[in-house]
Length: 121
Image (spheres, rainbow, N blue to C red):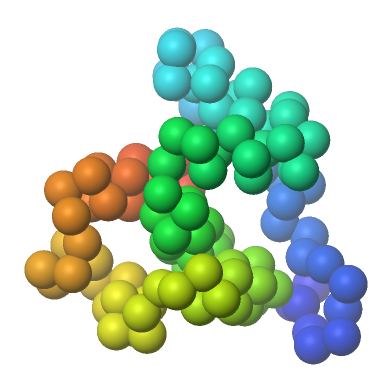
């Protein structure tokens, strides 16, 4: 069922935990970190992830993952969050083709590459 304006939330978040656990590397240190982050309450998850990574990069990864997953609710929400945090419209416009642009640093490109690998698994 597709998300519609006015609908409270999307349905894609309920499928993510099972998918992460099914990844071949889910029980590696990277997988353990992702699983631990997933089990952290949302308020604390935002606080802990922002200490480690630029908040704009967190939003870019969320947007790119939402694009891949085809979740309109999440895409709309994370795009609005990124704009509020100061992300540029140029970078948001080219995000689906991030690998073909010079807008993103090597660190951002690595994060986007990882996000795509996880989302495509």
